[in-house]
Length: 472
Image 1 (cartoon, rainbow, N blue to C red):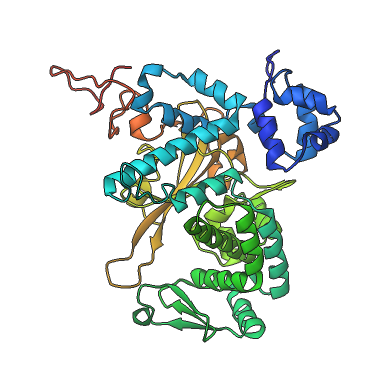
Image 2: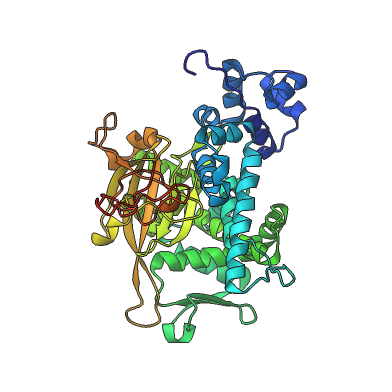
């Protein structure tokens, strides 16, 4: 901690304790303080001392830097909320947002969720799916958004699923580079399920289909070997741990049936990935190779996308990996995947910044491109991007490209093979922002829209660099 600055972290302490499922008394006992003193800390009536912070790091294996600094993800979310025109007269500043986030991260999250619900309902009204008087209202929260938010709240890590996957991996006792035969054998011997690769014409619009009555798992011929292995691991996980997945899904209290169904699919996908990459061996391989994705994915029989997504789940207490974030985008900038083990620097409601070179990777298919970016709050991130193929498998011409973007805070870059040879102390940095409609960076030639909380500057005698100049 710099100087004599006092840290009032009551909201974050309270949220940490609740996330761990601990009472004030139990937490106070582990920290070696009285319950009444912890209560004062949580109500910001006492500053958190360095001694208490160190005890927390030891007791709960947390990153002190993350605890004692603003949460870039939450801050960005609130900035986007209060950039809405309806709040323009309030003039909510970044300082106000930082104070709210520090005082009550739970309240901040509630505001973000409420705003998302407001936006979703507006979209449904525009589409005619919901009457303005609410009489034909359907659910206004999209299941995909709810599941994404849930994964984010858990830092995309689920210890219960890791344990199930490790036990199943040991039972398979198979070569991690060629897990397919072991999965196929266990499906057949333990569950009487035959696995068959079928022509694309037979599979129609499906890539994987399980026939419960005939006990037959059918996989499209268009699937890559890594995707076939994943599909078998997914089905085996459902058969052997369906009850565990149902119980976990119920404990996470999804708001409706559709969200629960999608949540179970998400949990089953997580379990399948963890079966293919048992936590300890996968992390050890990544650490030993400097997080060389190409080398490690070959060792475990993975696709690039599978390995990249698994990197966002390495959050085990006492055995954490580099906290990566990951997005998958198409050439139009639409995000179809978004996961983060740590801070996520981009807008939760919009796309990514065009200055981030994930978009440039489409010009060099299959090549890894790197970049160091800086967000408006001054945080810097080391990022990687490359394209992958999306398998359509139905008609010629439908197979196209997607881009995978990975990143971590710059302080972790020295651990990555991709950063070797770069000057990380005085690096070349690209300034990026959130979605254009809330980004306040001036003179950006790639701006696609003016920020909604600023007045456009139109001068018929001057052509600015940015097509959407505004009054700062």
